[in-house]
Amino acid sequence: MDEDAAKFHLLSETRYKYQDADKVVSGIGNLEGHILEVGCGPGFFTIPLAKAIVGKGTLDAIDTSPEMIKILKERLSTVDLPVSRVVRTIVGDAERIYYPERSFDLIFLANTFHDLKDPKGFLVRMNRIMRPGGFAVNIDWSAAESEFGPPAQIRISEEKSKKMFEDAHFVFVENLYGGDFHYGQKFTRP
Ligand SMILES: C[S@@+](CC[C@H](N)C(=O)[O-])C[C@H]1O[C@@H](n2cnc3c(N)ncnc32)[C@H](O)[C@@H]1O
Image 1: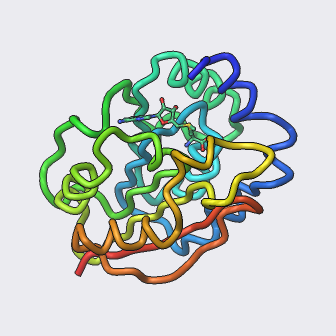
Image 2 (image 1 turned 180 degrees about the vertical axis):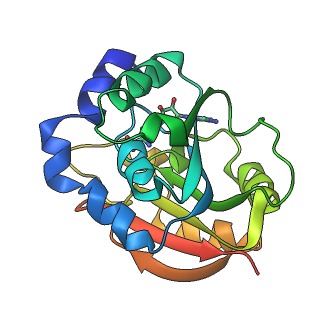
């Protein structure tokens, strides 16, 4: 991915029209505890997530791209709330990073599931590090080709995503608002 292009699109004015980040975050429900955001990019969702958990929890925001993390840090420093104290930014690969079992109350990923090299292996890993009773939220592009977004052939449909999470022993809870061209899914772990 060309990082400048990605940066531009990921924070473009157009995007704010078709995907309301605050609405996505408020749709998740009560946020508290320890959150992991996988593939945070420049923070389109990280900042609303961080604002929602100030005083109630912490957020690890991980991305393989140092450039994305740099932009995220700059953006966090401009927010008029102590979000920098809540967010730990990590340059790393969520398909390889180690966390102890049952570390997280919420695992959130947006527009990233279709980018993973081994999504099945990733889900097994995420299930292990999520607390029983915690939640996983996946927001990703709907399968139908749209004016924006990744090519249709690399998208993971809503049905396929649900099956993959269930195969990894997540239990489907409900569909969430994801955006005009996106689906949102919430899962738990018994
Ligand atoms: C399309 S961007 C989405 C960024 C952000 N979630 C958003 O919706 O604006 C996908 C991001 O996932 C990151 N990514 C891809 N594979 C990853 C992995 N295995 N671990 C961590 N980050 C990853 C990419 O570097 C990129 O920043």
